Length: 639
Image 1: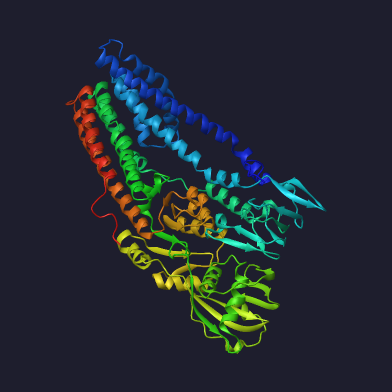
Image 2: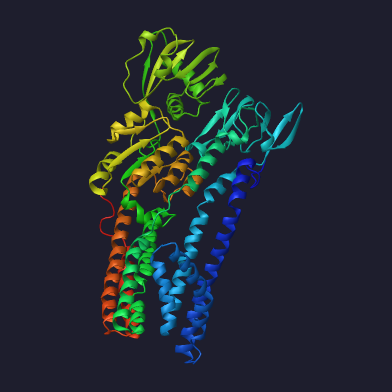
């Protein structure tokens, strides 16, 4: 079965598409228009320079006039609409500058402003459009057809026609179309796309399968337990779509400064005109007030920091996160693979007197090879180290929250948690050792207590120092762990790394709700590594993915740290803080110099031409300072 880009979870996606089609069409049209305007402006400016300085032609300004007429007019129209909505940003002042440049004959300056506005609009629109790529990545993976078994025949059926209780065949290397239970066959499935855990799960009769998992070399026959629209994969898609639709709109640094600078510049220009009665003073003030430090210097600092981050193995997918992360006051971490190495090891085997250690480990490992739980790998690794030969298991069942059950060598086996054990009546329960916290599982053989296995998922070497320095060095007031793991495991890890606030056994939907609640109180940073973290990443102020376990997680995050290292997270925080400082120096410094020039122009001591020259000098100084962001500082982290 081939993955196709159509009719994936058809009922829900078609509704979303019809609802958003008109808006998406308008967005695409405006994106293409701004891209064309930006390209035309570049060509016109280059042609002007050639005609004037190369050929000394008298008609050199014609390309600039064409740019202002064809490109400046629609941009100014859009900015007028913002004015009526009372949105006073730096781009609004740029629109006034375009009009002013035409009135005073500064066509080159006006064309440059057109280029900056159109280019910025095109990049911003592209970023907004590409935000939905995470949903496209999910949709493109899922098949549109399932192989339905009808008697002795296998027929292809549309995914949205599959009902609960039907029998399907999942061919080798197929993507599992729905949630179900294996009723025939023996093989493995790769569930890392959904769980973030980079390992394959053995499947046999009784094993559960989840939609979105990739089948291995052997065909499996499954009985569906959910419709496609209600499967785990569909639920994650729905949560991610909802998260994207409700993603908070953040004000960019340039807009925040422009909201102050624009009214001041316009008010001063009007005041100069009103007091002197000379319209030329209004024009002179507006020419030198052109917010090039905001429109050029800040993007230069951002681009330089993106380049520096890339050289450090940090991919910045959304430039806005560079401006926002320094203002985050709540840090939320996933547990496994983020604060830990994600590789728990079996450290203690506490065996009941009537059982043998080798026999218990053999039986447990033989059953655990069918489990998706991270502790299964630790048990299998311990069995491999001891040279144990695994045996076949049957009647395998792993219901959520009920542990792993099955039969190995005609013996009933159950691997469960301490809390579940208390609900059962078993023999040998008085031999149960006291709880020691951390990771553990209990082994029952023939309904009798047989052993306690204890594990340690070691925190990263830098986890404790990283968490400890978030408050004093980066002003985080709240640090949390939000994990789908059991509470005892999360609490033990939290103690190890110095975190007191935890939320355990959370689903992707619950993670999303928690992040939304925290983001409503303060800006949030969410750090995770699995696809189950993707909705929360999208809802946080800044979402950061560690490692390369999931393409969808990387799409959802604003930042992707290619190495599984918290030190790189700290590096990005320092790069962001330095970028913000340099951008503010360039923008505020340029604005202050422009304001000084505006007072000179308002008092009649600076002509429009002199104002244009002065503004160019200010721009050069601001941009040169902004370029420093591309070069690494002496200290790039403090761990």
